[in-house]
Image (cartoon, rainbow, N blue to C red; front, side, top):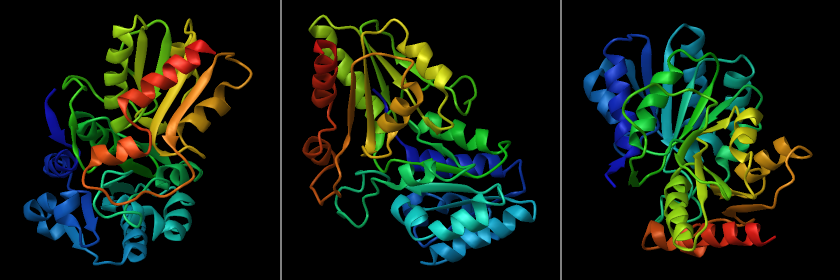
Amino acid sequence: MEMKSLRMAYGEALVEFGKTNPDIVVLEADLGKSTMSCLFKDAFPDRHFEMGIAEQNMASTAAGLALAGKIPFYSTFAVFAVGRAYDQIRCGIAIPQANVRICGSSCGLSDFGDGKTHQSIEEANIMCTIPGMTVLSPIDAVETRKMVKATLTHKGPVYIRVNRNDLPVYTPVEGDYEIGKMYRIVEGSDVVIFATGAMVWKSVEAAALLKDEGISAEVINVSSLKPLRKSEILKYAAGKKAIVTADESTKIGGLGSAIAALIMGEVNLPFEQIGINDEFGTSAHSYGELLEKFGLTEHDIARAAKKALKN
């Protein structure tokens, strides 16, 4: 598979759409070379605001720009974008439903070298609890670009969760992204795997392992964590013998919890959840090392599918 950077896709999309939309402005918290918002700074220096390591001020400034008619994108590491500015997000952005777009870069365990303080395994769960907040988790670089485009006409605040590492490209270039829609990546008939972000890639690999054992697994890309449509879940769960969910967040309040809550009492199928237990991350030499430690590999997903089917 072709591997591409989601961060680079984000920065390039800001530049691309900034050429035709003068209302787009970008704010950064001293990490532009990591989030790749530096590309926008190079192209439109008068519409880029370096806020320094002051995430609360950045969120409040973005809210003010939105209320003045601009379309602000603010970006930094996911753990800082949400954790340091939660009150400003809640009161200044979410309550007035300001059209602010927040990009949480290096999400999940993808910043493998910096350990617990920088690995954001709970921020998407937190953002999903905020009323009126849209939460997106792209599968690859192409979908990241499409998401940025989709947010330009969307009303209300949006959070986009971006992986630090290059990921395989599954999204076709053609067509637009629809917020709230789920996308089938692999067709299958025995078990459905609802996955998001980098876990879609691992779920595709798990489906290949299961196929070798005579098990047909369907993989669904849930890149819209909120809104999460019950109709989409029921559509893909129909006719299956089991459900597995996979996301790179804590299990408590994660994708599995959200799906289970929506279909409770309507779908009576064995259900297994792949995610991070009630613990923080840790430093490692590679991303793959962390995925293995926390049970987020293709082998873990395949085992969960077989366990669900056995039950």
